[in-house]
Length: 93
Length: 178
Image 1 (cartoon, rainbow over the protein chains, first blue to last red):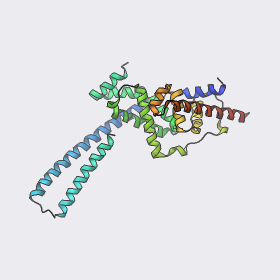
Image 2 (tube, chains in turn purple, red; image 1 turned 90 degrees about the vertical axis):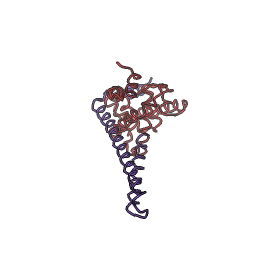
Image 3 (cartoon, rainbow over the protein chains, first blue to last red; image 1 turned 120 degrees about the vertical axis):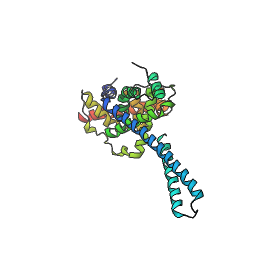
Image 4 (cartoon, chains in turn red, blue; image 1 turned 90 degrees about the horizontal axis):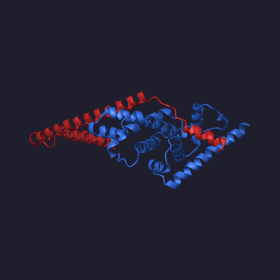
């Protein structure tokens, strides 16, 4: 082996010992945050689904179909639920 | 010392964060070294990629089949994370390429490490990856194929070509100094 070879192998094989404590803590914190976020999204989706169900029930019996506010509310709720679902799906990939 | 399979089983069945922390502590050093080498001196970006790697490992742990070693599987995830970050950040063009005048024939391991980081910026990514996995991580050619999804013959030629390029640069630098 040439001198250049030796130099290259030695340099490539050098392993700087990097302190793992802080890094591990950061990773675990992110894991916990992610779990919390998933739970929040789950509750948000459930709450919105419940709200929407209640609203649709009321809508069916009490409101006029041309009521603009009701339609805005309905489409807003649907968008939020869809957004939360897509976000959760993106997270799990 | 608890083996990897037991730790993985604990994470999957009990969502045991201590078991996962043990896995992170065990593999953080090689994974961080690997992404540092690939990032060519962008240590902050390398840290982000390394953290993202372990988050993905946590998410995808149930897909680990055990056909390859945990280390190979983790390196594959790190490599894919790096490619994803690279596409987003476009940091490849910003790295400082090695100048012949930078070369110092040093005995210090730390200086050699810095120097090799700069030297490797003269290689294409696949050469850099194969060379790092082969010499730094000590992986077999077959394992490198699994990590990078590059065919075996191409892996071998990337290692040889990459090594030869670096040797040529070192030799040229030495000749330039004399």
